[in-house]
Image (cartoon, rainbow, N blue to C red; front, side, top):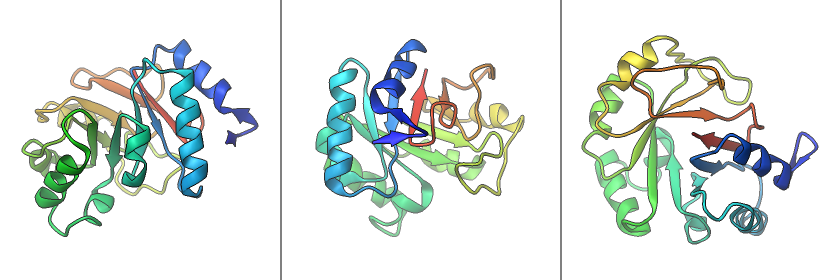
Amino acid sequence: MEKNNQSLEWIIDKAKSFDAYLIQYRNKTGDFDEKKEDLLTIKSLCSDTPLIINDDITLIDYCDGIHLGQEDILNFVGNIGDAARLIRHTIGDKKLFGLSTHNADEIAAANFLPIDYIGLGAYRKTSTKSTTNILGNTLDSLAKFSRKPVAAIGGVKLYDEFKYVTYLTIGSGLYEDYSVFY
């Protein structure tokens, strides 16, 4: 897969140059085989960096975890707590499990879920996703209420600084299908 005329190899080299802690693969339009091939390629290029898939649990065997949005997790079961427990049971304890959050209520609920981290945002408006809830400078003050590590998401730039955020998620800076946590 290429994005903006850049190969997976170029994107992974870029992520490695920032000492990425985690790489998220996000492909909303590809079929199973394309996504699987991309995941295997990414793993071959950076086997020491955990790789998570966005939303697609059918590909969990080819990566190190999954990240879900609030709406996506409810596709498993209509209750967020039951859905999180089902997903954790399905992927096991060795795989990473992240959940997007957007406000204090979602953070409070996530504190008691069997997840490894939360994504919190959107920090800024972004061209890659339609977002009506922009947190701006309130993102950091919300992050301090999380009992899980926090990844700032949505329009985050390399130079952004936060006191209570563990990871900066740089997405569109490396092209919208790949996020780097560092």
